[in-house]
Length: 175
Image (cartoon, rainbow, N blue to C red; front, side, top):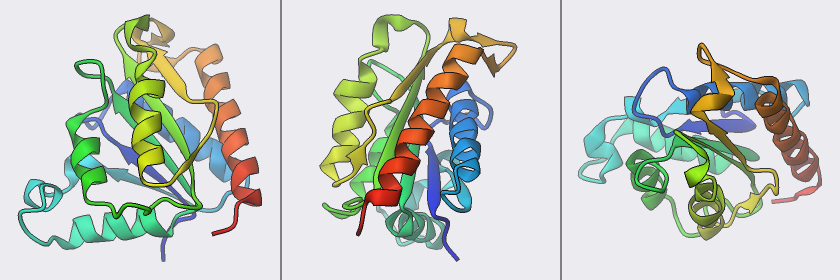
């Protein structure tokens, strides 16, 4: 059984700020009634499968989950002014219109405000390149917006707004 909402964590670390925001977005979407959620940690998928060197059941299952979901939430730390390589290799495996008719939320985190535009100049085009309808309320969080690994209320509010927008769009989007 596939989830109605799939979250993709592009962080190489199992605990990260971008993953914390992803988990908040998935919880918010579940509260909105968008259906069950599934978090896919790209760092846990076999590298040879992600790089397309060989067929891999886990990678195939992740690609299928994304293709069957109605809402996709993508989170990544920003490295060198763009999304992680994990997201790049995963999205390279998707067919051209894999996310057509699906709603997507872009979430990114970085050390400071200097990479804020990575959401609009990196993640948004990545998602649109495979056909996703990307919410206007993308989210970018900085180190300063976290206290002991917990996002501050204004950042949580932005996640909630993005989830609300995605739920509203998904309820009106037909595939």
